[in-house]
Length: 220
Image 1 (cartoon, rainbow, N blue to C red):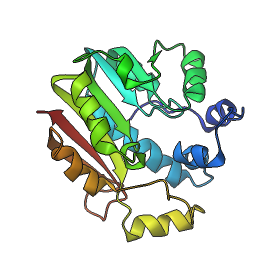
Image 2: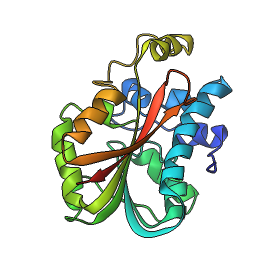
Image 3: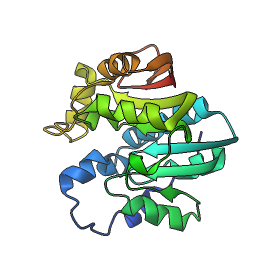
């Protein structure tokens, strides 16, 4: 289990308004979920990062990119596990504030084209790719910056009936229009765009209908 940023720290970091950021953008960053009064919802959000950390499995003399780092909640773990950490987000201000608060060494980049070919060993995209309208273009860029055999670690929602009912029960009914796809279609699309699908873990429990899936891919 990774170290969790406290709900009070998250509330403090995200209290300042960011120019150009709408309530819709805050929803896309899952800020309401991490601040939710229901501890099970907060647990499930953090549990995705636990599984990704299990996939990473320890300290590595490698370079990782978190694509769509959001508030930066996973950056402390990535800094613990990798020698070099890069991060990208449309609104990186909260992640930068957390990076400073935790005295991390994350390097924030504005766009993928600032990253050299074969510079990255691992890309983490936690509940991000379902928001993209032109997924193949991004996957092509991922393949360019990943070294041969590099890994792509992805999590995403199933958007099944149980997930949709859970969204309503959590008070998020009417939201989710920013999800252009689901994790099962993402798996298919990633596997047909130059990656091999190597493993998947379902959440919250492997034997029940999943709300989220965390997947590992390797560059072909």
